[in-house]
Length: 77
Image (cartoon, rainbow, N blue to C red; front, side):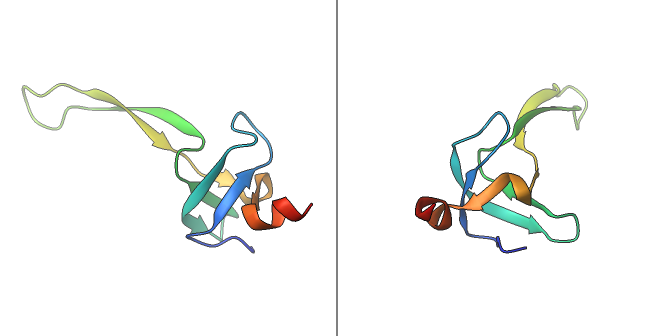
């Protein structure tokens, strides 16, 4: 895997194609990366305490490394 935490990547495929973002976490064993603001999904969270309401939170989900390229390398192509 040539993409590491802190790199700026450009998304090559999927709904977020063409967007750029910073890598927040890398999962080399799974071949996935977590990019800030990319592949956002809604997660329903249960109320933690009695009397508190549950909520819907948007979270970035991991994407496969093959769907992203380093932003500096993609400019060369």
